[in-house]
Length: 208
Image 1: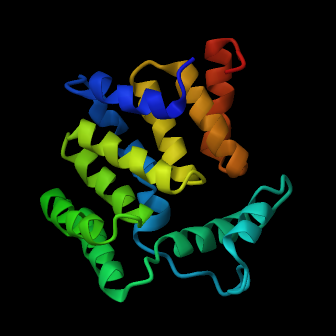
Image 2: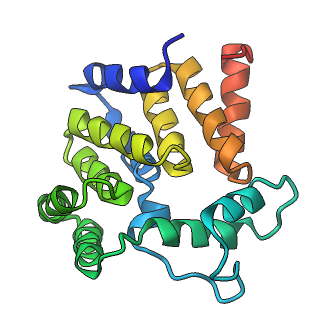
C-alpha cells in the first residue's frame, strides 16, 4: 500500500480531466481547511486560555470525552491562520475575501504573492489549494495540499479533504486511511466518524 504522500502525488494524474468531480468542490473546502482556517476566526472568549500552546491544545482535542472540542478547534485554527506578519495576514485575508466572492483568479493572485513571500506559512498553501480546485486546476491544488501536509502534518482539515479526493478517485482504501489519520488527531468531527464507518463497511474494514 503506498504512503499517503506518494498517493497524493499520484492523485494528480487521476484527477486531471475527471468527469463529475465538481460535486466534491465543497468538500475541498475541507481539504484546504478553508471552513476552519482561511477566515482566521477569533478565539471564543470562553475557549482555551491564550497561553495554551498548540501541543496542549492538541492533547485536549484528542481527549475522547472532550465536550469543548469546537472551541479548542477554533483556537487551533486561529493560531494556524497567523503568519506572524501583519502584511502576510492581510494577503491571506484578501485571498479569503476574494474566494468568498467567487473571484478565484484574484484569490490565486493574492495567495500566490503570499506563498512567494511566506513559503513556510502552511495556510497560504492551504487557501490557494481551494482556489485552484474551484478553478478546476486539480494538479495545482494537489501540489499545494501536499505542501500543507509537509509543513503541518497535524492539519486535520487537509487530511479529511485528502480523503474526500481519494474517494472521488475511487481509492476507498486510501480514503479510509486518510480519514483515520484525521480522526486520530481530531476524534470529534461527526462527518469524519460517519465516513470512516461507511468506508469500513464498503472496504470490509481492512486494516490499512
